[in-house]
Image (cartoon, rainbow, N blue to C red):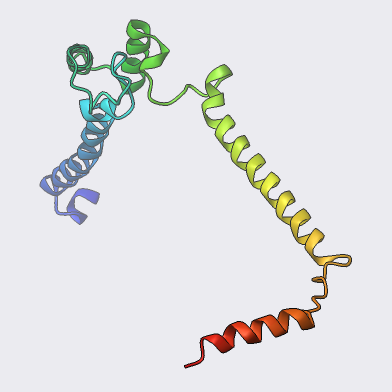
Length: 163
């Protein structure tokens, strides 16, 4: 009875095929989005010889490292698995970003603390400087001007230059 309502068996099959077709592309897209590329890895790892990003390095060691990464990508390894393999092969210095624990966290913390401390010291110095200039007897000393003898000599000197 329900088959006649929806146009029969061909209509039911068409609906099932449509649902299946709609369900497949996201699954295929998800599989490709999980796959990593050499460009993604190059932006996150360093050449251990040059100390520059792998994408910018041109040393023979960087070429070998790129080939190693390409081999791991072809094997279907994820980004984290590739990074772990690189760390095992070349050490922690191969990572562009510190791992965020232990001594490596100091790469983030030290510059921030130094900036905050410098700004605080500058603010205190400005505050003390402004406070010392605002308070107390900071008027300029009174100036008496030239004496009578100095005025007479000045008038004589200027008189010689009159034309």
